Length: 361
Length: 125
Image (cartoon, rainbow over the protein chains, first blue to last red):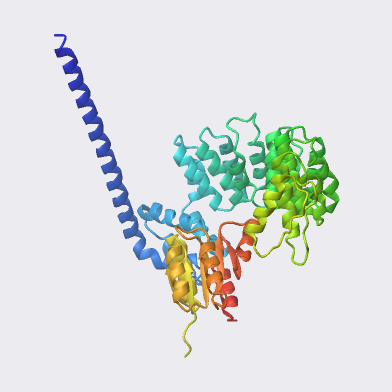
């Protein structure tokens, strides 16, 4: 009896494992077959419409006959043609994109997609909100905004992308708010940037520079760095003098390097001083390299005991000194890390001569 | 009658490739369309193209890689190169021109505008 029971158990487990593997293989086979059949069916539906679709997509349908034929596609084929049109809207804009969205609007996709944004299925919500963005109609923003706080990360990311496509200033402000750490499932910075990549987001970003949440301030500063909105220079300067969070200050300093000017040299020099955290110092040296023409600005940082800081200074110095016709010299007392960095710069750019002076340590 | 000017289109997305090739064909160009960087590299070095439209993000060799290799290997090469990309930041555009691009079009794009840019590069009015 003692021997029989484990034997039965092992046999039972073996059968369960075999059944699981068989079920998995069957599922894979069904999924692959369904995909192949769907692709074949799509190809069959789209083949006779290919010329019309191409004509509308390229603006070669002056009479509107091709668009009319597409609008008249039988209802059972519309879902397939809808996906083909959506795929083209991903890379087209202007009048051709408008002609394609007119076909979709004629089929009443607006209300259907808005309805799908409330589906219990996350994948369906994600696709629907992404599609809503392709209609490029700011009036749809109220459908998109609630999905910035969706429980699914995929849906939140799609909602951000939709706001970028709808180019809604109000949507941009909501994207920034959704970056706040006190919001449920806050947005990562890199995702938020997709919803701020249009000129109309500038005002919302300028306002968010002074937001109470440091993550929102960071997102705003990062957006300024990416998109270079010069009107934000004054709020960035002001925020930088008050910012308590080192990480946020790093982003603000980088932003000032993009939108600032020669008048910011003193502030950036202060940020690059040993009183600042290392990250801020390195960012400030990079920003100084952007706004300042004088390579001697970096002479103090080149001698810094912190190797990472002096390397950053050497990179900035080397960049300025690589101007043709200027003979660079490294001040006596430059750190070994700085000298090594400059030597590396010379190797990277063999045409530029960087004679190093004696006295480096 | 003069031979139509040849244009190379390198784009991995079949829908985009089809739209560009169709539009340029309608504009009177002789278009050769390829789907990856390696094919674009081969065509650029072995074909006589007036203009090449290169997608930046392609499998294998990117459009920037193809462009940089061409400009380095054939400094006197007469093919004008237009980069097509979703990268819209100033630094990306700068990088494209620094690599030797003659023009830069950002996705999403207007097909008609792309044809105007290719016409300008090919020296057609």
